[in-house]
Every structure is written in structure tokens, then in C-alpha cells.
Length: 459
Length: 84
Image (cartoon, rainbow over all chains, first blue to last red; front, side, top):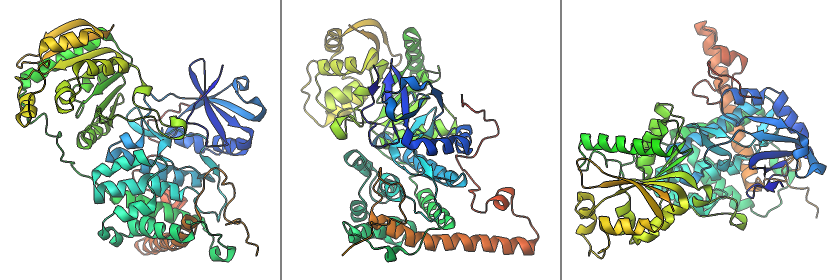
């Protein structure tokens, strides 16, 4: 039985569905002309060869769940892990914005227009952003404005500007407003100095005012006598592009970016730990790994270097950005850095709570790694050890976890300013708690430290 | 009093996404300005090319509005199509 993908209902051009565990897209009759133009104009080939639009193959029409309106059924290439804009670091969102504009520009060249500039249409695939919505193109009619202009400003420009000019943490507004940050809100939150920036003052501040002024008003034709030439369209896209490119977050100095320079690891024990992690991963041979609290990905790379698709989650946008910059510089294909607060992970969002999946719903994964993390959950966030075990067991089958005892300097630091209300936080207490959910497969001390590394399998 | 449908001239097929009337208006005005900028840029480039005798690069003669640097949609030299 085909099963509709629940987040895929907005576009009348087609929809995603699953059949026998495989992902397909029905292209509706309504979209026939546009689909043919995309495939035959050379636009698809251009974007496919540059690896900026997801590849697909046409399969038999008999698979269509709604044959009465179906034109084609296509099977898109699969992205290992679906991520959302509120989980990206600044540079990921910026690269996604640049790609969206570049595709809009390229489409014009082939007589098409990008009708949907949603940030959710971009995914990170093999280390690079890629556009995944094959049905987002329509025939370009000279004189028409860019239908996705407002959407682009809400989904990309507003959050990028807020992150740079106001506060990096405002990225989280994207989690609240899943159709992009309302421009009047962005305009209010941005400092006054941004009014001196041509791109921001026009595309955000004046744009917001114009929206307010014409909200719910019928606008008569003579008000928009001016029609938009193709040159004007290029002018608009280029202005957005240069505005986006001018926004930069250099090094985000946050709590964790110096972690590896600033703790009591010696180079030797660091290397020993990496070897240990690697040998555990080789025992499990997972298809996919989630590294929780993975910082800049030092240990996630033990997995990704074995060509295992690895998601490295961290709460710190600075660490995630450092990791992403590394992925880009080294053209790494198996590493996906994402921002995630594990004490409040991404929930199910949107219509019917089903448009955007929670972190957990995107699992379970074969192997979860939680290195130097337990003390942050158990001590900083007061989560009982058994609850930590419960949560990790929900996320994946195997677990590589490091126990960091109270005698470790990192834990001492956490306990320095508060009462020690954690009598069970001992190696023995840890073992007892995790034994209730897992079978302990292996246990090795981390050389040069008082920590212990465990390999476990869900019971 | 009868209004014509909003932007009936400008909008062709927008039942899927509401572009917003204020967004459309400001865009058309802004784009006219920015388009003039593009036209001037091309004009100067041609004047400069005329006096320096330098030909504009291949991409710019074909399409004066082409992105010249870091265009992610440019086809890398080692690419192979994955179309099946």
C-alpha cells in the first residue's frame, strides 16, 4: 500500500509517497508542461551535472497512488539524513541561501522560474547543499515578478541578518515560524544600524513596511504599471545575493569551540580514545551513526572516515560551524554537522505535528555515540541515569558511551558551583542503570584519564 | 465598485504560494531600480571593453548577466551526469 509522506501536501503539482519502503514522487497532470520543460530545456541537466538538484529516475506510472491525476512517477535519490534550517549553523543556512538564488538565476537562463524558495527545499547531501524539490520550477513569463521573493526573505535573509546583526541564537526563531521569520518581526528585532545597509533596508525594513501597508488591501492595476523585465529580475536576484554574501559570522566564540585546546586530555590519550572508538565502530559496522554532543566532530570522524554517514550533533553553533567549515574545506561526504540541544531536541512541528519530524522520529539509527556527554545530561541537567539510558535506547540499537567520573576535572568544574545531589553518579551506578536497557558488550578504560568507554547493545 | 483581481496581470499561477501584495509591489519597484543598475553595469563594461580593446570574457559575451564567480550551479569539469 502506498503511504503519503505527511509533510508533502502543499503543492498541487505532486506529492511524495512511500511504497514498499521506497520513496517516490507523483507528478500530477497539472504539472505536465512544466515538468517536460524542466527535463527538456536543459535546466535539469545543468543542475544535475552541477549536483545542485537531486537526481531522479522515472518509474512505472502504475505506482501512482492517485492515477486519475498522475502524469509521472519519479524516484528521487535518497538523502541520508533530513535536516531542517533551525538545525543548521550560520554558514549552512548561508550556503543554502546562495544555492537557492543561484538556482533561481540559472532557471531564468532556461526560460523557467523558481516558484518555491523554501529553506526546507534544501538538504545537505554528501557534504554539500542540494535542492530537493523537483517540482519547484514553472515557466518564466517575462514581466512577472518573482513569486517566491517574500518567501526567500522570510526563510533566508531575515534569519541570516538576525544571526549576524542581532544574536546568533535567533536562529531558533525558525523553529517557531516554520514558514520563515515574519519580516515585520525581523525588522523590529534588527538594530537601527541595519537601515544603513542597502540590502537589509530594502529587502527587510521597507519590504516589511510595504507588507503592512498593503495587507488585506486590493491593489488596483494602475499601481503596478511597471512590469518586471528579465534584467530587473536579474537585478533583484543579484541584490539578494550580494546582501547574503555580505553577511558573515567569522569565528563564533562560544563555550565549546576551544574545548579540545582547553581540557586535560594529553595528545596521547586523545589518540588512544580515538583508536578505541574506532575499534568499537568496526565491531558494530553501522550503516549510520549519530554522534551526540560531538563538538567539532573529532570523534565523529572515526566513523565518517570509514565512509559511514555520520550526523554530528552539538548544542554549540560555533562548534557546528567549525565542523561544517572543515567538511567544506576537505570535501567530506559522510559528515553532517547539526545544531541540537539534547535537553530539548527538535520536536514534531507544523500541520498535524507532521510536517517536520522530531529528531527521534528520524531514527532509530544503528549506532549512537555519546562521548564526554553523560555529565552534562546527568549533572548539569539533573537527568537520572536510567532516563538517559532510556532516551539513548530509543535513538539507536548500539551505543558507544564514555563515563566521566566525579574525579574528572570537567565534572569537578560542573560541581564546583552547586550542591552534589548525585550520589548514584558513580561507575557502578552508571553500569547498573544502563544494564537495565542494554547488554554491555565491552568496557575499556580511556588511557591517561579516569574515564571509561563502553560498547553496548539494546536489550 | 469593482476591483480587478490583485495583480491579475502579474500573477499567472500562484494558487500554491501567496506572494503577498505588499511583497509584490515593493519587489516591482525595487527591481526596476536594480535592473537599471544591471543595465548600467553592462553599458560600462561595453564602453570599457571598447576603449581597452579587451574582449569581455566568454560568459559575459554570451550572457551579460551570468554569475562569474562561485556559482554553485556551474558544472564542474569532472562532473558526470547521474540522470538515469
